[in-house]
Length: 285
Image 1 (cartoon, one colour):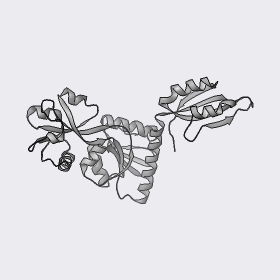
Image 2: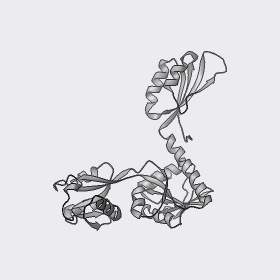
Image 3: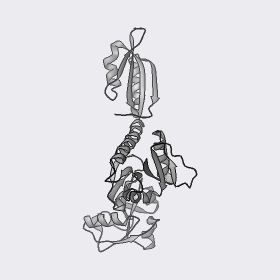
Image 4: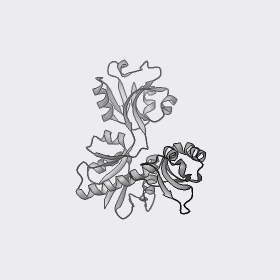
């Protein structure tokens, strides 16, 4: 049984549970504070803090785990990355007060103090940039540090930058781009590796389907070449004869959600009938 470490709370935990549920691996726990949960017959979940998941996987307490890439890199543990889950996107940035006069890393002088929840990543970044700094580890509320005189600049996570602007801070440089990742031990057993790959493929199939729709329409035979351009599909549209042997054939294809409006309009212009658009739960390549 593959043991999967999952975040136990927060927005990341909600997104992870939704993804696993869509893949047929619903997280079933006995209560809100449960430490373990069932994911079906072949998988068991360990519900822990997102920050601790890299350690659980690296130490072998879990075979795979889902957490932010920023936390994986900060842990300094050797881990494998199986899949980018494409949510929880954010950036780890260097930020300074709006009145600091600091616009780029080159504007840093002396040995400025850097408040951060990510001391290892911050230290590595400034060393690579050739800048001497004094790291001030904090556990939260990093944005207030420059205003309290605790630090000159900060290294913190941001998505839209709105929180930084509220605290009269601006971005100076990007340290790391992060998102939720499916991680694994770098040296799994053969059985664990197979199960982990199967899990990654199941989750990947859900992610592929999320921005796709399945389109079906009865198209005039004489318009098939035009229909091919309108509905290219994954490997081209599927064309099926209708039993009445008439002038129409059924054309099916996978279409990007963002293109649905134009696709339907173009099909109608070709004289298509019985146009149907439906969601896709999973899509295998």
